[in-house]
Image (cartoon, rainbow, N blue to C red; front, side, top):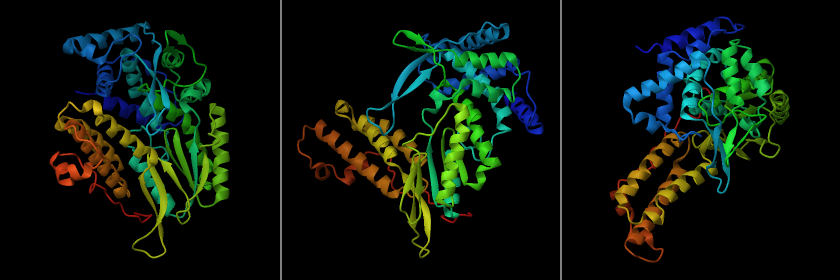
Length: 435
């Protein structure tokens, strides 16, 4: 019987009943067999690359259930006996979606460290969930990007036509560690737990054969980093609960947030309040990417959570404007890049059925996320692009030259391939602000 949910409910209720309670007995729960097993299943489900020790999830699983159990029991023993020490993070650079040539640094912990981090998240999350505000949607139980987008739609349609489109510069790299730990200590007094958290923050980065120490930031790429970011940025939610609500409606998804305001003056006040709140955390708003947007009659729009948001004239109610959303330019560039990679000329020797089998999960996943809103035209563009790429790949397979792919490989031919089509999959929610 899985007792982890019961443990989390007890922790959540205890924290909810006493907002000033500090928990002093959390570390011992990390080594519980059910907590360790849940942490392992979470880490194994996400797969991921090995850390600096080169040990992969597959290598641990290769020995079967007994090998996994022995691995977890050994890790639990290290925790109980105080022998556990984290390894440095392996630094990798991954491409930024929709931004050719730009990369984002990630620190990949060893699998053993990821398991302990996941166990820590299981224990700490319900304690801090009791405090988190309704304006926060990212990486939280029973909260989603769809809910954040709905909150934006309701605020905009409810008359808040000015938007602070905020961008926190290098949030995970620049966040003040003492400020983060101080916010954790508001709820946690367990010395061993705090020591464990500090050890991860000081673990260092392994890159190019050298381990370098970082003075600020959290281990982005670890199972714990979204929770740590939410703990720190809860300061923003608190500021809005106390005084920011006068300026506008805050919608935050981890380190990405917007504030929807009724006037430009209030949007400017929201920017000032955000800057003042973030400064003690060692964070700042990006001076170029942060801007105030006027929605008005569709004059300007903004990007948030992959969608471009803009007011559009209603087709049913004369003179009324409602917020519409569709995949942003970056989102479109990202899906086209993935399609292009999977239909590249290096695949010319493969059967088209195999290429389509690799392509369909990508299209289905992207389409499911963007199926809400007003994405029909963008979906048609992606379908056309997929058709073109597959037709050009087929032309190369048959040694055909020229660019008249549409005449050779028609829409009827395209349909026979079984490609997942985005057209016709959009779900249209009501545009009314109160529904």
